[in-house]
Every structure is written in structure tokens, then in C-alpha cells.
Length: 509
Ligand SMILES: Nc1ncnc2c1ncn2[C@@H]1O[C@H](COP(=O)(O)OP(=O)(O)OP(=O)(O)O)[C@@H](O)[C@H]1O
Ligand SMILES: [Mg+2]
Figure (cartoon, rainbow, N blue to C red):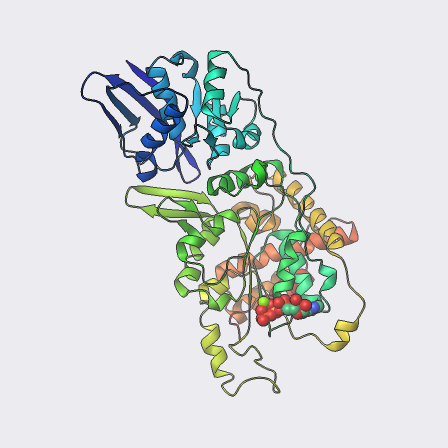
């Protein structure tokens, strides 16, 4: 007799159904798992055997075969323990197998039969809900699974509790979707950054329209500080965005307390990060930093210090908004719609252009240092701003605007954009993503603005990408002015284009 249990395998963000089939047949005693299991799955028979032993259930001295179909799909991870254990129990007729037919099961077993948390519960629960199935998962993952919607969920702390529930001798309640309480984040406030008005303005434009930003300046001028203020001025995630981001973090096992993420992710990997750490990969393909920053910010501090290959690997995801990890046995895709914020010194000593401080190798060393950032990479930076050294007078000056004030303007500008793109019936809601016909529709200039853009396109040899990026930034600047004046600005004016052009350089020096 064959018992069947449904579970899933993960391929990037995609969930593939897996059918765990367990057969007990006569023959020499053996316990075999087939169907391309990885090391963790192959070891699962020891955990399952020990967990059943802990409950006083011995495996029959027969031939036990576990097949995981489809046989050509690689099975990775420890979440197959529970489906295998339930399949064995059903095949041994300890539990009725009919009750498990419309269930998706995930969980890792300990030797004492407790069920340990696993990654990927949210995507698995969404898959179960869309197929009208129920979900059996570890107790610690119940809060996360409950976000998937209106499906039946059994979140069990140990195998005995689960068996008792299935046999009807004990009843478990459906877990509640967990909301994070007060957000314990302590964010640096923009008011603590003295001076740097133009950099603050660029930060506001970047936040409002979702544009990429590069800050260049001497050491200690506040670049890292400004970037860390970004989280405080970005609006919270919309429910749909929160679900998308949480699915990726669920796969990486980094969801806080099983609750959904509420705030836009801000990821700041160290410059020693490897290519798989940034893009995704590893033996069991995991989302990289760019996917963990989906719908949020990726901050690359000390940009030229990143390995060249690692930086160049960002070029494609910056355009396609997804990370594609290629493997011998297939491709794995993760969404990677992030906003890039980067900071760098103009040269190795950091004081290029300051006659008192610059080193003897200037300006040659600057050329070498800046050459680490390739032209195509620079072309993708919508806003490039200088962050000069702060004057003592600035440090003594009264504090400026707080993050809350700027955040209010950013939120209002995003609302204007959301309305605009909803009218165009497109799936995005910020200027940075506008393209094609929509961009042509939203980027209407008045005559002077058009003339200025065309002239500067010729004189600065702006690329086609640069041209469209200027239009998007100019649109955001016009939207921010709409917020300030309270009047909708339909046509982008010369002043908006001029400001957008001022943030664009063709080379760094
Ligand atoms: N504009 C500023 N206003 C207030 N404090 C500042 C400012 N700039 C720098 N500081 C102070 O200097 C410290 C270092 O600043 P920060 O790390 O942002 O410099 P940086 O520009 O990133 O330098 P580096 O190029 O060396 O990374 C901050 O923690 C803060 O105390
Ligand atoms: Mg810094």
C-alpha cells in the first residue's frame, strides 16, 4: 500500500509541488529515499526513525521506500522530515491517510519528535491556499503562515500533538497572523546631519521617485550618515509589497518573529561581499542581498572597494529588476526591484581638490580610483551628488528639517505618482519604473524644457538611458514641487530639467 503526502520544493521564489510516496513492502528490512534528495533530505530517515522511536513507534522490519516525485527535481532542505514521517505513519495505518490528502506538509523533526521551524513557510502557505489545500507546519511558523489568507493551518509543536489532532483526541487552534508590536527601530534622524543641503535634497528626490543615488565626498562629510537616514524618510510598505518582500525573507529564514515585514528593507552589505552573497546562489540557492533589498534600498558604502566583478554583476538586475541564478539543472529567479544608494570618496586619500589635504599623487590617483566604477554602472546612477567637507559654521548651525517632515513630502509625492500610474493601469507606482508609452505620457515638457534637454543631450553626449533617466528624475522633481505648491504640475518645466541635469555627470572627476 502506498501513502501519499503533498509537500513543496523551492526554486527561487517559485514553489513546486512535490508528492512524497511511501510504500511498505515485504523483503529485507531497508529504508530508502529516492527522488534526487540532497544530503539534508537523505539524512532525514535517521531523524524520522529517532522521532518515531521517541513516541514508542518502531518502524516495521520490512522494506520502506520513500519516493519524492517528480523524480528529476532536486529536493533540498530539511522540511521533508515531517511529510516523510506522516507518510510512514499513514502507510503503517497509525493515522488515516484520507485526512492528509488535501494538505501541504512542511517541517523538520528533532530526535525527541518536536517539530522545528523551517524556511519558506509563507510561499508554501500561499501555494497551499491557491490550490485550496490546508497546511501543516511547525508551531513557530504558524504566525507567518496565517498571512497567506483563508486556509486551514495546523501548526504543531511536536509530532505527538499532530497525531492526536489528526486522530481527533486533541484539537489545535488555527494560529493568529502575528503583527509586530511597536517597531523597536532606532533610526538616525536627518536633522542630525548638519549642512549638506544639496545632498539632502538629492536624498529626498531619490526617496520620492525611487531613483538610484551616488554620493561622492571626502572622509567624514556625512555620506554614510545620510544614507542611513533613508529608511526614516521612505513610506512603509503597501500590503502587497509587504507580502512580496516577506516571501523572499521567509526563504532566507530572516523574517522577524514570524511576522510580516512592515518597513522597506535597507540592506548595507560590507564591500567584501562575494558575488553569490550579493546576487544570490550558494549550494542551496538562497536570495542574495539585492533580493533581500526588494522594494527597498541596497546601500553600497565605499563603492570602489567592492570587487569589480561583483559590481558589474549588478548591471543586469538594475535593469531587469530580478536576479537570475543559473545552475546546471535550471535557472532560479528572485525578484530584485531595489533602489541603489552608493557612497564613495573621490580618490584613495579622499581629499581630491583640497589643496591643503590632497596627496602628492593627485589627480592621477583619482583617475585610478574612480576607474573602478565603470561607465555603464555610472550611467545607471540617476543622481550623482557631491558631499563636500562640512564647515565649522555649519556644524554649529541650528538643526535642520527632521526626517518626519521630509517623509511627509515623500509620501505625498508618492501618492501623486500612485494615482498617475493607476490611471495608466500599470503594475508599478513610482517614476523610476516608468517606461515605454507610459514614460512618453508622463514626461511631457514645456517648450523651454524640451529645448534644454535636447541641447544638453548633444553637448554632454548623454546616453539614451541617461535621457530617459533625466525625464524620470525631472518628473519626480516636478511632483515634489506639486506637493510644495499644492498645485498639480502636468508639464515638466525648464527648472525641473535643469535640476535633474545638475545631478548627472558623464565622468566622476
Ligand atoms: N554633516 C554632518 N553633520 C553632522 N555630523 C557629521 C556630518 N558629517 C559627518 N559627521 C560626523 O562624522 C561621523 C562620520 O560620518 P560618516 O561616516 O557619515 O562619514 P562618511 O562621509 O561616510 O566618511 P567616509 O568617506 O570615511 O566613509 C558621523 O558619525 C558624524 O558624527
Ligand atoms: Mg562612510
